[in-house]
Amino acid sequence: MKRDWIATARTLSEALPYLQKYADAVVVVKFGGNAMGDDEAMAQFARDMVLLRMVGIHPVVVHGGGPMINAMLDKLGIESHFVRGKRVTDKPTVEVVEMILSGLVNKRIVQAINDAGGRAVGLSGKDDDLMVCVADDPELGFVGRPVEMNVQVLRDLYEAGIIPVVAPVATGMADNETFNVNGDTAAGAIAGALKADRLLLLTDVAGVKDENGEVVTQLGAERLRGMIESGVVKGGMIPKVETALAAIEAGVKAVVILDGRLPNAVLIELFTDYGAGSIIRG
Ligand code: X2W
Image 1 (cartoon, helix red, strand yellow):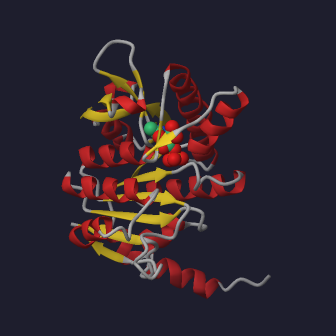
Image 2 (image 1 turned 180 degrees about the horizontal axis):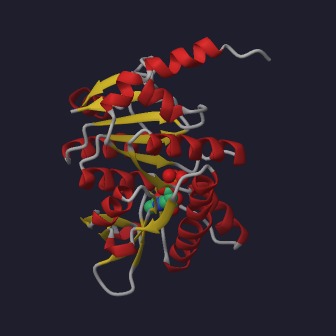
């Protein structure tokens, strides 16, 4: 296949204003379990993170892994229940959650970024007390709501050129407590505490849809609140848009909800006029 090198060079040239705009920006990327594809898709995501780092952006990856937790719970014969999009988490379940998120999923992402030539370090909300939680709701068991964020460890890592990769597992106020945190919630809390320039929520839908099922590319916080109240935004999208609104209130400049299965979704969003998904601003 003959490649159009002129088009390739033009693409790079057209990215210049965006590269200048995002120099030194802190970009928190939530990489959901449903957005993680096969090894090739994982390698592509990892290359995008390394590219961000190489152009002077500070990416912070916060991941999910719901489908991987489900698969292990199935194997162990433990049933999964969800209430308002969150996993009801008893003691045996939280142990599996920590093993899968901090172990399997976190290390798969770390390894992929390192294989792409980056320097990734994996940690969870427990490391350096990054994220301290209380129980979100008695009905949910060990599901955490972040109440104290200590994000200096993330700054220390990214200032040293390292890409932090965070598993949404947290410590509690009491000794020996472990909490399962929804990945979107964790990413929003981290982005808010860092006052990030962007929070990108990579999921498996194209963005926030209006009453006609069309993706809305730009949204203000007020319109979005109205869309929740009128029921236009529903189901699994509710925790995402609530996370987006809370992050903006905490000082994140903009949040983008986009389809992480799209090849190079992050690059399309940050470096092209086209953008991707729905961008939410205050
Ligand atoms: C999630 C944590 C993983 C997650 C869970 O147990 O599935 C809660 O529901 P995704 O892939 O981003 O959905 N925690 C409390 O959020 O994964």
